[in-house]
Amino acid sequence: MSLNWKIKNQLLELTTIDQNGPSISVIRVDPKSHQIVHAGTNYVGTTTTGKWDFSAREGPKLAASFVTLAGVQGELNMQLVPQRDNAMVLRVGAQQMANVQLMRKPYSTPLTPAFGLIFPDDLEKTYVHTDRRRAEPLHAQT
Image (cartoon, rainbow, N blue to C red):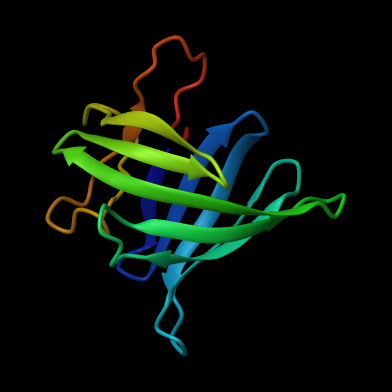
């Protein structure tokens, strides 16, 4: 997973990788409602829309819905739970949540993503899945 400023302090890009390949989403503040909104799609055409709650007790939480190209609809929740300076837990799912341990990727990477909404004092953090058995890291390639 990676989170990058596309337009500093205005528009974030969230990239994740799962069994369907990469998903790319944008996160921004809606100027009319002042809510933090999320919209994205993956490489098989599934779209996701939702709202982030940054007042959630354990960390920013997304409540979203998705629609596939075949018309299948559902709900998706995601929460970013900081653990320590270099680690967090990604909680993701619908009725049942899965916890994915993430840790910050070293700065020697060509990636320079920003977790500014989570860690406003340090805007360049990348987190990758800590399970080394996975073939694909959970970060974007640029």
